[in-house]
Structures are given as C-alpha cells and as structure tokens.
Length: 180
Image (tube, rainbow, N blue to C red; front, side, top):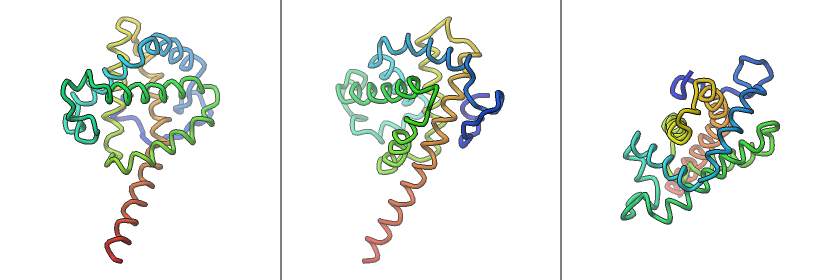
C-alpha cells in the first residue's frame, strides 16, 4: 500500500490489519524518527524539495516560494522545521494519538486559507516517504515504509475533514460578503 492508493479517510481502529499502528509499527517509526530528528531543519528542507519536485506549482502556495536561493531561505527553514516538529509530536504520541488530534484538526482547518486542497495530501505523503527514504538509506525497509504509511493515513484522516470544513467555511464567508 502506498500513499496514493491508501484510503485517505481511514480512522484508527483496534484490529491488527485494519490500519491501526501495531507495536512493531510504533517501534519502527520511533527508531527511524530518532535518526531523522537529529537534523529537523535539513530533513524539513528536503521534504519541501521533494514536494516541489513532485508538484512544482506548490511553491506558489508559500510566502517563501519565490525567495532567492529558496533552499537556503530562512523562511523556508523556519516553516520546514515547524512541519517536522509537528511530525515529531505525532511520533511522540504514538501510544495515544488523542492529544495530537486537536493540533492536526487546527492545522487542517488553517491550511484552507492557504489554498491547500485535499488533493495535496498524496503529494505531501509521497514527499514525506521519499524524504525518509533519502534520510535513512539502507535502514529504510518495506516494513518501515508500511508503518509510516499507516501513520500518514491516520494523520490525513484527521486533517482532511478539517481542511474540507475550513474550505466550506471560507466559501460560505466569501458568498455572504459578496451578497452584502
């Protein structure tokens, strides 16, 4: 299962093979994240390089997208580090994801005002997996990828509905403004 074919609204459940994170999944994610977290900024910049490689038009969604020498841009580095810290928060809460749900919900809703659409989730997921592959090298295995895909699917299951709600609210507000 890869990010493009994974069900994007799968909710975490309790059966072993239904998308829930197993003990082994959590161990693989934590072990790999320890290595990635040693350079949050560098790996975060790589994540954005991968996003922009997959979807060059995505640069237009970011205030730093036109910065000279983009991958050395302070604004990109700050944003990339923040994104990676959010991933780290999810990793820190693997045993009880409930504390991260409000954070992901808020992020999903907030991204509506930046013109993010649900179709962007597979791009970011693919870029995240590529970043992990690049950063972990030989340590990146099919099992590790499958574990990260599960975590991504869970993340999207929270963020996507919030994003859609944010888009609908923005559309309603725009309609009310135009009609007044």
